[in-house]
Image (cartoon, rainbow over all chains, first blue to last red; front, side, top):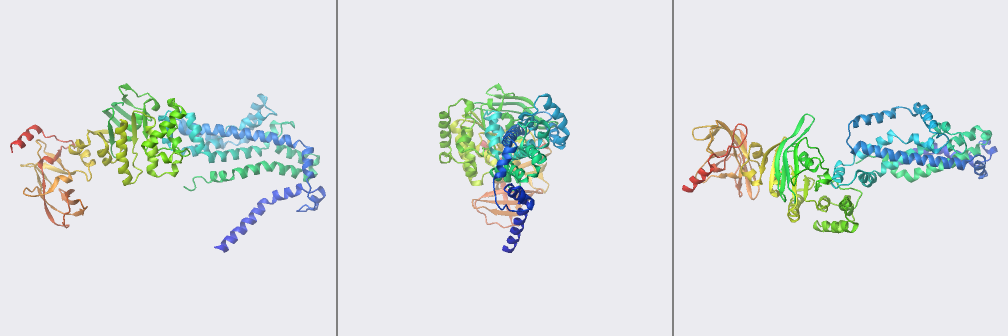
Length: 269
Length: 363
Protein backbone atom coordinates (compact mmCIF):
# COMPACT_ATOMS: atom_id res chain seq x y z
CA UNK A 1 0.00 0.00 0.00
CA UNK A 2 2.75 2.50 0.91
CA UNK A 3 4.62 1.49 -2.26
CA UNK A 4 1.56 2.28 -4.29
CA UNK A 5 1.00 5.55 -2.48
CA UNK A 6 4.59 6.55 -3.08
CA UNK A 7 4.18 5.86 -6.78
CA UNK A 8 0.89 7.73 -6.99
CA UNK A 9 2.29 10.75 -5.19
CA UNK A 10 5.42 10.80 -7.33
CA UNK A 11 3.26 10.83 -10.45
CA UNK A 12 1.02 13.52 -9.00
CA UNK A 13 3.97 15.72 -8.08
CA UNK A 14 5.46 15.28 -11.55
CA UNK A 15 2.19 16.17 -13.31
CA UNK A 16 1.71 19.15 -11.01
CA UNK A 17 5.21 20.32 -11.85
CA UNK A 18 4.53 20.01 -15.57
CA UNK A 19 1.22 21.86 -15.21
CA UNK A 20 2.69 24.61 -13.07
CA UNK A 21 5.85 25.11 -15.09
CA UNK A 22 4.53 27.78 -17.49
CA UNK A 23 3.14 29.85 -14.64
CA UNK A 24 6.26 29.40 -12.56
CA UNK A 25 8.45 30.31 -15.51
CA UNK A 26 6.35 33.36 -16.29
CA UNK A 27 6.71 34.46 -12.69
CA UNK A 28 10.42 33.83 -12.85
CA UNK A 29 10.83 35.85 -16.07
CA UNK A 30 8.84 38.70 -14.59
CA UNK A 31 11.67 39.12 -12.06
CA UNK A 32 14.53 39.07 -14.63
CA UNK A 33 15.92 41.75 -16.85
CA UNK A 34 16.00 41.42 -20.66
CA UNK A 35 19.48 39.99 -20.93
CA UNK A 36 18.80 37.21 -18.46
CA UNK A 37 15.67 36.15 -20.34
CA UNK A 38 17.68 35.78 -23.53
CA UNK A 39 20.32 33.74 -21.74
CA UNK A 40 17.57 31.22 -21.02
CA UNK A 41 17.87 31.32 -17.24
CA UNK A 42 15.20 29.50 -15.29
CA UNK A 43 15.81 31.24 -12.00
CA UNK A 44 16.55 34.97 -11.87
CA UNK A 45 20.06 35.75 -10.64
CA UNK A 46 19.10 39.13 -9.23
CA UNK A 47 15.34 39.21 -8.74
CA UNK A 48 13.91 42.70 -9.11
CA UNK A 49 10.46 44.22 -9.29
CA UNK A 50 11.45 46.70 -11.96
CA UNK A 51 9.37 44.92 -14.58
CA UNK A 52 6.22 45.39 -12.50
CA UNK A 53 6.82 49.08 -12.17
CA UNK A 54 7.45 49.21 -15.91
CA UNK A 55 4.25 47.31 -16.70
CA UNK A 56 2.13 49.82 -14.81
CA UNK A 57 4.11 52.62 -16.35
CA UNK A 58 4.02 51.74 -20.00
CA UNK A 59 0.41 50.65 -20.41
CA UNK A 60 -2.63 51.65 -18.30
CA UNK A 61 -2.66 48.21 -16.66
CA UNK A 62 -4.63 49.42 -13.67
CA UNK A 63 -7.42 50.77 -15.88
CA UNK A 64 -7.52 47.46 -17.73
CA UNK A 65 -7.68 45.51 -14.48
CA UNK A 66 -10.52 47.64 -13.16
CA UNK A 67 -12.39 47.32 -16.46
CA UNK A 68 -12.02 43.56 -16.47
CA UNK A 69 -13.08 43.31 -12.86
CA UNK A 70 -16.19 45.42 -13.41
CA UNK A 71 -17.18 43.54 -16.55
CA UNK A 72 -16.54 40.10 -15.02
CA UNK A 73 -18.51 40.96 -11.88
CA UNK A 74 -21.38 42.40 -13.91
CA UNK A 75 -21.59 39.30 -16.11
CA UNK A 76 -21.33 37.06 -13.06
CA UNK A 77 -24.19 38.79 -11.27
CA UNK A 78 -26.25 39.02 -14.45
CA UNK A 79 -25.81 35.36 -15.30
CA UNK A 80 -26.52 34.12 -11.78
CA UNK A 81 -29.64 36.26 -11.41
CA UNK A 82 -31.11 35.45 -14.83
CA UNK A 83 -30.15 31.76 -14.78
CA UNK A 84 -31.57 31.15 -11.32
CA UNK A 85 -34.82 32.94 -12.11
CA UNK A 86 -35.19 31.05 -15.41
CA UNK A 87 -34.36 27.75 -13.73
CA UNK A 88 -36.91 28.47 -10.99
CA UNK A 89 -39.59 29.05 -13.61
CA UNK A 90 -38.67 25.83 -15.42
CA UNK A 91 -38.86 23.78 -12.23
CA UNK A 92 -41.58 25.28 -10.07
CA UNK A 93 -44.02 27.09 -12.32
CA UNK A 94 -46.37 25.23 -14.62
CA UNK A 95 -47.01 26.82 -17.98
CA UNK A 96 -47.94 25.63 -21.44
CA UNK A 97 -45.08 24.51 -23.65
CA UNK A 98 -42.61 24.33 -20.77
CA UNK A 99 -40.78 21.31 -22.18
CA UNK A 100 -40.59 22.84 -25.65
CA UNK A 101 -39.26 26.16 -24.41
CA UNK A 102 -36.68 24.38 -22.32
CA UNK A 103 -35.55 22.40 -25.36
CA UNK A 104 -35.20 25.64 -27.31
CA UNK A 105 -33.21 27.04 -24.43
CA UNK A 106 -30.86 24.09 -24.50
CA UNK A 107 -30.63 24.25 -28.29
CA UNK A 108 -29.00 27.67 -27.98
CA UNK A 109 -26.07 25.86 -26.34
CA UNK A 110 -25.41 24.18 -29.67
CA UNK A 111 -25.00 27.51 -31.48
CA UNK A 112 -21.37 28.64 -31.21
CA UNK A 113 -20.98 32.08 -29.74
CA UNK A 114 -18.90 33.21 -32.72
CA UNK A 115 -21.87 32.64 -35.03
CA UNK A 116 -23.93 35.24 -33.19
CA UNK A 117 -21.14 37.73 -32.98
CA UNK A 118 -22.06 39.84 -36.00
CA UNK A 119 -25.71 40.40 -35.06
CA UNK A 120 -24.64 41.04 -31.47
CA UNK A 121 -22.10 43.56 -32.62
CA UNK A 122 -24.69 45.38 -34.72
CA UNK A 123 -27.11 45.44 -31.79
CA UNK A 124 -24.52 46.76 -29.40
CA UNK A 125 -23.40 49.32 -31.95
CA UNK A 126 -26.90 50.62 -32.56
CA UNK A 127 -27.44 50.88 -28.82
CA UNK A 128 -24.33 53.02 -28.66
CA UNK A 129 -22.68 50.64 -26.24
CA UNK A 130 -19.32 50.42 -28.00
CA UNK A 131 -16.50 51.18 -25.58
CA UNK A 132 -18.75 50.79 -22.54
CA UNK A 133 -19.08 48.14 -19.85
CA UNK A 134 -22.64 47.47 -21.02
CA UNK A 135 -21.50 46.42 -24.46
CA UNK A 136 -18.97 44.11 -22.82
CA UNK A 137 -21.33 42.51 -20.35
CA UNK A 138 -25.03 42.59 -21.29
CA UNK A 139 -24.78 40.23 -24.32
CA UNK A 140 -23.61 37.49 -21.94
CA UNK A 141 -26.32 37.77 -19.31
CA UNK A 142 -28.54 35.02 -20.71
CA UNK A 143 -26.74 31.70 -20.28
CA UNK A 144 -28.39 28.42 -21.24
CA UNK A 145 -25.69 26.43 -19.49
CA UNK A 146 -26.29 28.24 -16.21
CA UNK A 147 -30.02 27.74 -16.48
CA UNK A 148 -29.47 24.07 -17.16
CA UNK A 149 -27.05 23.64 -14.26
CA UNK A 150 -29.37 25.35 -11.79
CA UNK A 151 -32.46 23.60 -13.10
CA UNK A 152 -30.84 20.25 -12.39
CA UNK A 153 -30.12 21.44 -8.86
CA UNK A 154 -33.59 22.89 -8.26
CA UNK A 155 -35.14 19.65 -9.44
CA UNK A 156 -33.56 17.87 -6.49
CA UNK A 157 -35.53 20.10 -4.11
CA UNK A 158 -38.58 18.10 -3.02
CA UNK A 159 -41.68 19.51 -4.64
CA UNK A 160 -43.49 19.16 -1.33
CA UNK A 161 -41.38 22.01 0.00
CA UNK A 162 -42.88 24.25 -2.66
CA UNK A 163 -46.36 22.95 -1.94
CA UNK A 164 -45.92 23.45 1.78
CA UNK A 165 -44.97 27.06 1.11
CA UNK A 166 -48.00 27.51 -1.13
CA UNK A 167 -50.29 26.25 1.61
CA UNK A 168 -48.63 28.57 4.08
CA UNK A 169 -49.28 31.42 1.67
CA UNK A 170 -45.62 32.22 1.09
CA UNK A 171 -45.06 34.13 -2.14
CA UNK A 172 -43.09 32.56 -4.97
CA UNK A 173 -40.36 35.11 -4.73
CA UNK A 174 -39.94 34.63 -0.99
CA UNK A 175 -39.77 30.86 -1.51
CA UNK A 176 -37.17 31.41 -4.23
CA UNK A 177 -35.16 33.78 -2.05
CA UNK A 178 -35.47 32.10 1.35
CA UNK A 179 -35.53 28.44 0.41
CA UNK A 180 -34.39 27.68 -3.13
CA UNK A 181 -31.29 29.90 -3.20
CA UNK A 182 -29.94 28.98 0.27
CA UNK A 183 -30.20 25.24 -0.36
CA UNK A 184 -28.50 25.66 -3.76
CA UNK A 185 -25.42 27.52 -2.53
CA UNK A 186 -22.92 25.09 -4.03
CA UNK A 187 -24.04 25.22 -7.67
CA UNK A 188 -24.55 28.97 -7.37
CA UNK A 189 -20.92 29.41 -6.34
CA UNK A 190 -19.84 27.04 -9.10
CA UNK A 191 -21.75 29.07 -11.66
CA UNK A 192 -20.39 32.35 -10.31
CA UNK A 193 -16.78 31.18 -10.52
CA UNK A 194 -17.37 29.80 -13.99
CA UNK A 195 -18.96 33.06 -15.17
CA UNK A 196 -16.24 35.19 -13.68
CA UNK A 197 -13.37 33.20 -15.15
CA UNK A 198 -14.94 32.91 -18.60
CA UNK A 199 -15.53 36.63 -18.77
CA UNK A 200 -12.14 37.49 -17.31
CA UNK A 201 -10.43 35.44 -20.01
CA UNK A 202 -12.60 36.71 -22.86
CA UNK A 203 -10.60 38.10 -25.76
CA UNK A 204 -12.45 38.27 -29.08
CA UNK A 205 -15.53 40.21 -28.01
CA UNK A 206 -13.69 42.93 -26.05
CA UNK A 207 -11.38 43.28 -29.04
CA UNK A 208 -14.40 43.97 -31.24
CA UNK A 209 -16.38 46.38 -29.10
CA UNK A 210 -13.57 48.40 -27.51
CA UNK A 211 -10.99 50.59 -29.17
CA UNK A 212 -10.05 53.11 -26.50
CA UNK A 213 -7.64 52.64 -23.66
CA UNK A 214 -10.32 53.67 -21.21
CA UNK A 215 -12.58 50.75 -22.16
CA UNK A 216 -10.15 47.89 -22.84
CA UNK A 217 -9.84 44.83 -20.67
CA UNK A 218 -6.67 43.11 -19.52
CA UNK A 219 -6.52 40.38 -22.12
CA UNK A 220 -6.47 43.01 -24.85
CA UNK A 221 -3.82 44.89 -22.89
CA UNK A 222 -1.54 41.88 -22.83
CA UNK A 223 -1.91 41.32 -26.54
CA UNK A 224 -1.28 44.98 -27.11
CA UNK A 225 1.99 44.75 -25.16
CA UNK A 226 3.13 41.82 -27.23
CA UNK A 227 2.51 43.52 -30.54
CA UNK A 228 3.85 46.93 -29.53
CA UNK A 229 7.45 47.95 -29.56
CA UNK A 230 7.89 46.60 -26.05
CA UNK A 231 7.35 43.10 -27.41
CA UNK A 232 10.97 42.22 -27.01
CA UNK A 233 10.81 43.05 -23.31
CA UNK A 234 9.37 39.76 -22.12
CA UNK A 235 10.01 40.55 -18.50
CA UNK A 236 7.46 43.38 -18.59
CA UNK A 237 4.89 41.27 -20.46
CA UNK A 238 5.22 38.47 -17.93
CA UNK A 239 4.93 40.90 -15.04
CA UNK A 240 1.62 42.03 -16.51
CA UNK A 241 0.54 38.41 -17.02
CA UNK A 242 1.28 37.56 -13.39
CA UNK A 243 -0.73 40.59 -12.30
CA UNK A 244 -3.81 39.45 -14.20
CA UNK A 245 -3.55 35.87 -13.03
CA UNK A 246 -3.75 36.90 -9.38
CA UNK A 247 -7.50 37.71 -9.25
CA UNK A 248 -8.41 34.40 -10.90
CA UNK A 249 -6.18 32.48 -8.50
CA UNK A 250 -7.70 34.26 -5.53
CA UNK A 251 -11.17 33.38 -6.77
CA UNK A 252 -10.21 29.75 -7.28
CA UNK A 253 -8.77 29.45 -3.79
CA UNK A 254 -11.80 31.10 -2.24
CA UNK A 255 -14.28 28.97 -4.13
CA UNK A 256 -12.28 25.75 -4.33
CA UNK A 257 -14.29 23.76 -1.84
CA UNK A 258 -17.64 24.77 -3.29
CA UNK A 259 -16.39 24.30 -6.82
CA UNK A 260 -15.25 20.74 -6.18
CA UNK A 261 -18.53 19.90 -4.51
CA UNK A 262 -20.41 21.45 -7.38
CA UNK A 263 -18.65 19.50 -10.09
CA UNK A 264 -18.97 16.16 -8.33
CA UNK A 265 -22.46 16.72 -7.03
CA UNK A 266 -24.75 13.75 -7.29
CA UNK A 267 -21.74 11.44 -7.62
CA UNK A 268 -22.13 10.31 -4.06
CA UNK A 269 -25.27 10.28 -2.03
CA UNK B 1 -64.07 24.31 12.96
CA UNK B 2 -64.98 23.90 9.35
CA UNK B 3 -66.80 21.19 7.46
CA UNK B 4 -65.78 20.01 4.02
CA UNK B 5 -68.21 18.92 1.37
CA UNK B 6 -67.28 17.01 -1.77
CA UNK B 7 -69.97 17.04 -4.43
CA UNK B 8 -69.37 14.61 -7.23
CA UNK B 9 -65.66 15.40 -7.38
CA UNK B 10 -63.86 14.03 -10.43
CA UNK B 11 -60.28 14.11 -11.60
CA UNK B 12 -58.77 13.05 -14.90
CA UNK B 13 -55.35 13.38 -16.43
CA UNK B 14 -56.03 13.53 -20.15
CA UNK B 15 -58.26 10.54 -20.83
CA UNK B 16 -57.34 8.71 -17.66
CA UNK B 17 -59.93 9.05 -14.95
CA UNK B 18 -58.34 8.75 -11.55
CA UNK B 19 -61.24 9.92 -9.36
CA UNK B 20 -64.68 8.92 -10.54
CA UNK B 21 -67.17 11.05 -8.74
CA UNK B 22 -66.92 11.26 -4.97
CA UNK B 23 -69.69 12.54 -2.74
CA UNK B 24 -69.02 12.91 0.94
CA UNK B 25 -69.39 15.43 3.71
CA UNK B 26 -66.72 15.65 6.34
CA UNK B 27 -68.17 17.15 9.49
CA UNK B 28 -66.49 19.90 11.44
CA UNK B 29 -64.17 18.48 14.08
CA UNK B 30 -64.22 15.03 12.57
CA UNK B 31 -61.23 12.74 12.12
CA UNK B 32 -61.79 11.39 8.63
CA UNK B 33 -59.47 8.75 7.18
CA UNK B 34 -59.00 8.15 3.46
CA UNK B 35 -57.84 4.60 2.97
CA UNK B 36 -56.99 2.47 0.00
CA UNK B 37 -54.23 0.55 -1.74
CA UNK B 38 -51.49 2.55 -3.44
CA UNK B 39 -52.63 4.18 -6.65
CA UNK B 40 -56.28 4.31 -5.61
CA UNK B 41 -56.41 8.10 -5.80
CA UNK B 42 -56.47 8.92 -2.10
CA UNK B 43 -53.51 11.28 -2.26
CA UNK B 44 -54.91 12.97 -5.37
CA UNK B 45 -58.14 13.42 -3.43
CA UNK B 46 -56.31 15.09 -0.56
CA UNK B 47 -54.29 17.29 -2.90
CA UNK B 48 -57.48 18.45 -4.58
CA UNK B 49 -58.88 19.45 -1.22
CA UNK B 50 -55.62 21.27 -0.46
CA UNK B 51 -55.75 23.07 -3.81
CA UNK B 52 -52.51 21.57 -5.07
CA UNK B 53 -54.36 19.77 -7.87
CA UNK B 54 -57.15 21.21 -9.94
CA UNK B 55 -60.60 19.66 -9.73
CA UNK B 56 -61.78 18.36 -13.12
CA UNK B 57 -65.48 18.33 -12.26
CA UNK B 58 -67.67 18.65 -9.21
CA UNK B 59 -67.75 21.13 -6.36
CA UNK B 60 -65.64 21.35 -3.24
CA UNK B 61 -67.23 23.30 -0.43
CA UNK B 62 -65.43 24.42 2.69
CA UNK B 63 -67.97 25.42 5.31
CA UNK B 64 -70.58 25.65 2.57
CA UNK B 65 -68.59 28.00 0.37
CA UNK B 66 -67.46 26.77 -3.05
CA UNK B 67 -63.69 26.50 -2.88
CA UNK B 68 -62.70 25.02 -6.26
CA UNK B 69 -60.92 28.14 -7.39
CA UNK B 70 -59.42 29.22 -4.07
CA UNK B 71 -55.66 29.22 -3.71
CA UNK B 72 -54.23 26.71 -1.22
CA UNK B 73 -53.44 29.52 1.21
CA UNK B 74 -57.04 30.77 1.10
CA UNK B 75 -58.58 27.48 2.18
CA UNK B 76 -57.75 27.86 5.88
CA UNK B 77 -55.95 24.57 6.09
CA UNK B 78 -52.59 23.15 7.01
CA UNK B 79 -50.95 20.08 5.62
CA UNK B 80 -48.41 17.51 6.77
CA UNK B 81 -46.52 15.75 4.00
CA UNK B 82 -45.26 12.19 3.91
CA UNK B 83 -41.63 13.30 3.69
CA UNK B 84 -42.35 16.21 6.11
CA UNK B 85 -41.05 18.78 3.56
CA UNK B 86 -39.03 20.61 6.20
CA UNK B 87 -36.69 23.36 5.03
CA UNK B 88 -33.26 21.76 5.58
CA UNK B 89 -31.26 24.97 6.01
CA UNK B 90 -33.56 26.51 8.63
CA UNK B 91 -33.62 25.85 12.34
CA UNK B 92 -36.64 24.14 13.84
CA UNK B 93 -37.89 27.50 15.06
CA UNK B 94 -37.61 29.08 11.62
CA UNK B 95 -39.24 26.06 10.06
CA UNK B 96 -42.22 26.47 12.35
CA UNK B 97 -42.56 30.23 11.97
CA UNK B 98 -41.73 30.55 8.25
CA UNK B 99 -44.89 31.78 6.60
CA UNK B 100 -46.55 33.19 9.71
CA UNK B 101 -45.79 36.71 8.47
CA UNK B 102 -48.48 36.19 5.84
CA UNK B 103 -51.01 36.09 8.68
CA UNK B 104 -49.95 39.54 9.78
CA UNK B 105 -48.35 38.43 13.03
CA UNK B 106 -45.56 40.44 14.62
CA UNK B 107 -42.22 38.80 15.35
CA UNK B 108 -43.15 38.56 19.02
CA UNK B 109 -46.49 36.89 18.30
CA UNK B 110 -44.76 34.51 15.92
CA UNK B 111 -42.31 33.49 18.61
CA UNK B 112 -45.07 33.04 21.16
CA UNK B 113 -47.06 30.81 18.84
CA UNK B 114 -43.96 28.86 17.94
CA UNK B 115 -43.12 28.22 21.59
CA UNK B 116 -46.68 27.18 22.29
CA UNK B 117 -46.65 24.67 19.43
CA UNK B 118 -43.19 23.43 20.38
CA UNK B 119 -44.33 22.87 23.94
CA UNK B 120 -47.39 20.92 22.82
CA UNK B 121 -45.16 18.60 20.83
CA UNK B 122 -42.19 18.46 23.21
CA UNK B 123 -39.82 20.28 20.89
CA UNK B 124 -38.78 23.12 23.19
CA UNK B 125 -35.22 21.83 23.58
CA UNK B 126 -34.69 21.43 19.85
CA UNK B 127 -35.76 24.84 18.53
CA UNK B 128 -32.24 25.86 17.54
CA UNK B 129 -31.37 22.63 15.75
CA UNK B 130 -31.46 21.93 12.03
CA UNK B 131 -33.75 19.16 10.74
CA UNK B 132 -30.82 16.89 9.89
CA UNK B 133 -29.80 16.89 13.56
CA UNK B 134 -33.15 15.39 14.56
CA UNK B 135 -34.43 11.83 14.62
CA UNK B 136 -37.28 10.69 12.39
CA UNK B 137 -39.83 11.06 15.15
CA UNK B 138 -38.65 14.56 16.02
CA UNK B 139 -38.80 15.66 12.38
CA UNK B 140 -42.33 14.32 12.28
CA UNK B 141 -43.14 16.47 15.32
CA UNK B 142 -41.68 19.55 13.65
CA UNK B 143 -43.94 18.91 10.66
CA UNK B 144 -46.90 18.64 13.03
CA UNK B 145 -45.86 21.80 14.86
CA UNK B 146 -45.67 23.64 11.55
CA UNK B 147 -49.21 22.53 10.80
CA UNK B 148 -50.74 23.50 14.14
CA UNK B 149 -48.90 26.80 14.53
CA UNK B 150 -51.01 28.32 11.75
CA UNK B 151 -54.13 27.58 13.84
CA UNK B 152 -55.92 26.60 10.63
CA UNK B 153 -59.20 24.82 11.41
CA UNK B 154 -58.61 22.07 8.85
CA UNK B 155 -55.60 19.79 8.85
CA UNK B 156 -54.66 17.44 6.01
CA UNK B 157 -52.18 14.64 6.50
CA UNK B 158 -50.69 12.52 3.75
CA UNK B 159 -49.34 9.25 5.15
CA UNK B 160 -47.47 11.10 7.88
CA UNK B 161 -46.34 8.01 9.77
CA UNK B 162 -45.12 5.81 6.95
CA UNK B 163 -41.46 6.74 7.46
CA UNK B 164 -41.40 5.79 11.14
CA UNK B 165 -40.67 2.43 12.72
CA UNK B 166 -43.53 0.37 14.11
CA UNK B 167 -43.11 1.34 17.76
CA UNK B 168 -42.89 5.06 17.10
CA UNK B 169 -45.80 4.83 14.72
CA UNK B 170 -48.06 3.45 17.41
CA UNK B 171 -47.02 6.28 19.73
CA UNK B 172 -47.51 9.03 17.15
CA UNK B 173 -50.87 7.55 16.24
CA UNK B 174 -52.28 8.30 19.64
CA UNK B 175 -50.47 11.64 19.83
CA UNK B 176 -51.98 12.84 16.57
CA UNK B 177 -55.39 11.67 17.69
CA UNK B 178 -55.10 13.53 21.00
CA UNK B 179 -53.84 16.63 19.25
CA UNK B 180 -56.77 16.59 16.87
CA UNK B 181 -59.23 16.32 19.78
CA UNK B 182 -57.51 18.97 21.83
CA UNK B 183 -57.38 21.52 19.03
CA UNK B 184 -60.74 20.45 17.66
CA UNK B 185 -59.36 20.12 14.15
CA UNK B 186 -61.23 18.86 11.15
CA UNK B 187 -58.75 16.23 10.08
CA UNK B 188 -58.43 14.42 6.79
CA UNK B 189 -55.88 11.68 7.08
CA UNK B 190 -54.62 9.65 4.14
CA UNK B 191 -53.13 6.24 4.80
CA UNK B 192 -52.72 2.89 3.12
CA UNK B 193 -52.54 1.23 6.51
CA UNK B 194 -55.98 0.06 7.52
CA UNK B 195 -54.86 -0.36 11.13
CA UNK B 196 -54.11 3.38 11.32
CA UNK B 197 -57.49 4.20 9.86
CA UNK B 198 -59.33 1.77 12.16
CA UNK B 199 -57.65 3.02 15.30
CA UNK B 200 -57.71 6.76 14.64
CA UNK B 201 -60.68 7.67 12.53
CA UNK B 202 -64.18 8.74 13.50
CA UNK B 203 -65.22 7.80 10.01
CA UNK B 204 -63.33 6.46 7.09
CA UNK B 205 -63.66 6.18 3.34
CA UNK B 206 -62.22 3.25 1.46
CA UNK B 207 -61.21 3.99 -2.13
CA UNK B 208 -60.23 1.63 -4.90
CA UNK B 209 -59.33 2.70 -8.42
CA UNK B 210 -60.82 6.12 -7.89
CA UNK B 211 -64.16 4.83 -6.69
CA UNK B 212 -65.65 4.95 -3.23
CA UNK B 213 -66.05 1.44 -1.85
CA UNK B 214 -67.59 2.34 1.48
CA UNK B 215 -67.90 5.29 3.83
CA UNK B 216 -68.66 4.78 7.48
CA UNK B 217 -67.44 4.23 10.98
CA UNK B 218 -64.44 1.90 11.15
CA UNK B 219 -66.46 -0.81 12.87
CA UNK B 220 -69.20 -0.61 10.26
CA UNK B 221 -66.67 -1.29 7.55
CA UNK B 222 -65.25 -4.10 9.63
CA UNK B 223 -68.53 -5.73 10.56
CA UNK B 224 -70.57 -5.01 7.47
CA UNK B 225 -68.22 -4.68 4.52
CA UNK B 226 -70.14 -3.34 1.51
CA UNK B 227 -68.34 -5.60 -0.93
CA UNK B 228 -65.62 -8.21 -1.19
CA UNK B 229 -62.96 -5.53 -1.72
CA UNK B 230 -63.74 -3.89 1.61
CA UNK B 231 -63.90 -7.34 3.23
CA UNK B 232 -60.46 -8.27 2.01
CA UNK B 233 -58.86 -4.86 2.67
CA UNK B 234 -60.05 -4.23 6.22
CA UNK B 235 -58.87 -6.51 9.00
CA UNK B 236 -55.62 -8.29 9.65
CA UNK B 237 -55.68 -11.07 8.65
CA UNK B 238 -58.52 -10.07 6.28
CA UNK B 239 -61.92 -11.71 5.94
CA UNK B 240 -61.89 -15.24 4.55
CA UNK B 241 -63.82 -15.50 1.30
CA UNK B 242 -64.95 -18.49 -0.72
CA UNK B 243 -67.21 -18.87 -3.78
CA UNK B 244 -70.36 -20.86 -2.93
CA UNK B 245 -73.44 -22.25 -4.75
CA UNK B 246 -76.99 -22.55 -3.53
CA UNK B 247 -77.95 -25.94 -2.09
CA UNK B 248 -81.08 -27.30 -0.34
CA UNK B 249 -79.94 -26.25 3.11
CA UNK B 250 -78.05 -23.11 2.31
CA UNK B 251 -74.84 -22.74 0.40
CA UNK B 252 -72.14 -25.22 -0.52
CA UNK B 253 -68.48 -24.64 -1.41
CA UNK B 254 -66.76 -26.56 -4.22
CA UNK B 255 -65.35 -29.06 -1.71
CA UNK B 256 -68.80 -29.89 -0.41
CA UNK B 257 -68.65 -27.91 2.85
CA UNK B 258 -72.06 -26.61 3.85
CA UNK B 259 -72.80 -23.11 5.16
CA UNK B 260 -76.11 -21.74 6.35
CA UNK B 261 -75.74 -17.99 6.63
CA UNK B 262 -78.52 -16.02 8.25
CA UNK B 263 -79.22 -14.15 5.05
CA UNK B 264 -82.42 -14.48 3.02
CA UNK B 265 -81.61 -14.33 -0.64
CA UNK B 266 -82.51 -15.88 -3.94
CA UNK B 267 -79.10 -15.71 -5.62
CA UNK B 268 -77.70 -18.94 -7.08
CA UNK B 269 -73.99 -18.22 -6.75
CA UNK B 270 -72.36 -16.01 -4.16
CA UNK B 271 -69.21 -15.38 -2.16
CA UNK B 272 -69.25 -16.25 1.49
CA UNK B 273 -67.12 -14.31 3.94
CA UNK B 274 -66.13 -15.00 7.54
CA UNK B 275 -63.73 -13.07 9.77
CA UNK B 276 -60.87 -15.23 11.09
CA UNK B 277 -61.86 -14.59 14.73
CA UNK B 278 -65.43 -15.76 14.01
CA UNK B 279 -64.20 -19.27 13.22
CA UNK B 280 -64.20 -20.85 16.66
CA UNK B 281 -63.27 -24.22 18.09
CA UNK B 282 -66.53 -26.24 17.98
CA UNK B 283 -68.21 -27.28 21.22
CA UNK B 284 -71.40 -29.04 20.13
CA UNK B 285 -72.39 -27.67 16.72
CA UNK B 286 -69.79 -28.28 14.06
CA UNK B 287 -69.83 -26.17 10.91
CA UNK B 288 -66.99 -28.05 9.26
CA UNK B 289 -63.80 -30.00 9.91
CA UNK B 290 -60.53 -28.43 8.85
CA UNK B 291 -57.24 -30.13 8.07
CA UNK B 292 -54.49 -27.82 9.28
CA UNK B 293 -51.97 -26.67 6.67
CA UNK B 294 -50.10 -24.39 8.98
CA UNK B 295 -50.26 -23.19 12.54
CA UNK B 296 -48.78 -20.12 14.24
CA UNK B 297 -48.91 -19.81 18.01
CA UNK B 298 -48.56 -16.14 18.89
CA UNK B 299 -48.97 -16.31 22.66
CA UNK B 300 -52.31 -14.56 23.01
CA UNK B 301 -53.79 -16.24 19.98
CA UNK B 302 -53.26 -19.08 17.55
CA UNK B 303 -53.58 -18.68 13.78
CA UNK B 304 -54.74 -21.78 11.92
CA UNK B 305 -54.50 -22.11 8.16
CA UNK B 306 -56.57 -24.59 6.15
CA UNK B 307 -58.26 -24.95 2.76
CA UNK B 308 -61.94 -24.27 2.16
CA UNK B 309 -63.18 -24.77 -1.39
CA UNK B 310 -59.66 -24.39 -2.76
CA UNK B 311 -59.05 -21.10 -0.95
CA UNK B 312 -56.73 -20.77 2.04
CA UNK B 313 -58.61 -19.63 5.10
CA UNK B 314 -57.23 -18.37 8.35
CA UNK B 315 -58.81 -18.78 11.75
CA UNK B 316 -57.77 -16.88 14.84
CA UNK B 317 -58.38 -18.77 18.07
CA UNK B 318 -57.79 -17.07 21.38
CA UNK B 319 -55.15 -18.67 23.61
CA UNK B 320 -52.41 -21.15 22.84
CA UNK B 321 -53.45 -24.35 21.07
CA UNK B 322 -51.01 -27.26 20.98
CA UNK B 323 -52.07 -28.46 17.51
CA UNK B 324 -49.93 -29.91 14.78
CA UNK B 325 -49.95 -29.66 11.00
CA UNK B 326 -52.18 -32.25 9.33
CA UNK B 327 -54.46 -32.53 12.34
CA UNK B 328 -58.23 -32.33 11.84
CA UNK B 329 -60.08 -29.84 13.99
CA UNK B 330 -63.77 -29.12 14.34
CA UNK B 331 -64.76 -25.52 13.67
CA UNK B 332 -67.90 -23.61 14.41
CA UNK B 333 -69.16 -20.39 12.80
CA UNK B 334 -72.17 -18.51 14.13
CA UNK B 335 -74.49 -18.20 11.09
CA UNK B 336 -75.15 -14.57 12.04
CA UNK B 337 -71.45 -13.83 11.53
CA UNK B 338 -71.39 -15.04 7.94
CA UNK B 339 -71.45 -12.36 5.25
CA UNK B 340 -72.73 -13.07 1.79
CA UNK B 341 -71.77 -11.19 -1.37
CA UNK B 342 -73.54 -11.47 -4.73
CA UNK B 343 -71.93 -12.22 -8.09
CA UNK B 344 -70.77 -8.58 -8.40
CA UNK B 345 -69.18 -8.76 -4.99
CA UNK B 346 -71.83 -6.53 -3.37
CA UNK B 347 -72.97 -7.34 0.13
CA UNK B 348 -76.36 -9.01 0.46
CA UNK B 349 -78.06 -7.50 3.47
CA UNK B 350 -80.12 -9.82 5.60
CA UNK B 351 -83.53 -8.96 4.13
CA UNK B 352 -85.38 -8.82 7.41
CA UNK B 353 -82.81 -8.08 10.04
CA UNK B 354 -85.58 -7.06 12.46
CA UNK B 355 -87.28 -10.42 11.94
CA UNK B 356 -84.11 -12.31 12.72
CA UNK B 357 -83.64 -10.35 15.90
CA UNK B 358 -87.23 -11.08 16.87
CA UNK B 359 -86.75 -14.78 16.25
CA UNK B 360 -83.67 -14.78 18.36
CA UNK B 361 -85.54 -13.31 21.30
CA UNK B 362 -88.09 -16.14 21.10
CA UNK B 363 -85.49 -18.89 20.98
